[in-house]
Length: 268
Ligand SMILES: C[S@@+](CC[C@H](N)C(=O)[O-])C[C@H]1O[C@@H](n2cnc3c(N)ncnc32)[C@H](O)[C@@H]1O
Image (cartoon, rainbow, N blue to C red; front, side, top):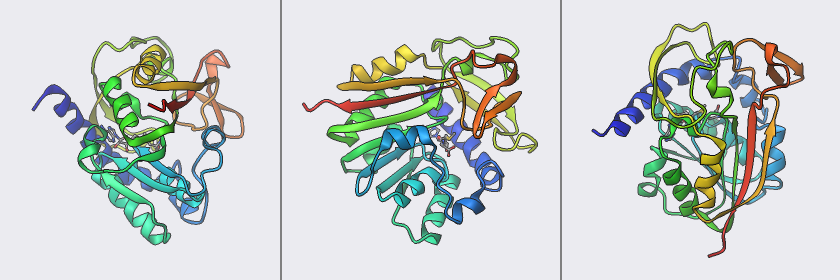
């Protein structure tokens, strides 16, 4: 096994452990979701626009709420995730709701072994590329699955957020990618009180690294935005400044907390 294969295996185990806790959590509120709540936020909804009848590939879909939400908005959606516990729940949920959402369980780097189709939109959001070692390879995969002129839409936590310790007291990690960060964790952002334990391997990717991976793989950047709040209460020491807008209390509006990218695959 290569080092990266070991890291993927560690992360797959971690997400398999987190999934049942997440499905039961008030954070993900699966009951409200089953009753019709759309899990997508305004930022990505605005970027996606009208997705009626669009073919959408959703990378790192976890247990499928956002992918199924895309289907509920009229898209023909396919979600991909490495954790089989997550994909099993996603498939069950789509079945239960009588929706045609497709799900594939694999490492996104291996996706071309499982899927032979081109999409209008590739979408990924909130807690994604930090699990990926190689963004050049990631951008090549996005390019591969898009039609010419197809769109890539992404919203994620800002790399500045990942520089801090869990309580946002000090700068602990490098802004730039200096290789895998290996950690032992207890609990998860969706349920901080649970005692599940797991190891993770993650990578910090700077904004320059993210944008250049797309630019050097035949994408034009249409928009890049940064936000001073998170729509999720997933960090420690937060304050809700408006409904569903969370900041780190002692940081006020000084930190960038999210970024959003819309990019188009070049025609040739
Ligand atoms: C924080 S979730 C992001 C999804 C979404 N924002 C949510 O909260 O439902 C991260 C997901 O990435 C998946 N993941 C991590 N590494 C992956 C890889 N190499 N290939 C595919 N999925 C991966 C995990 O299994 C997990 O479900």
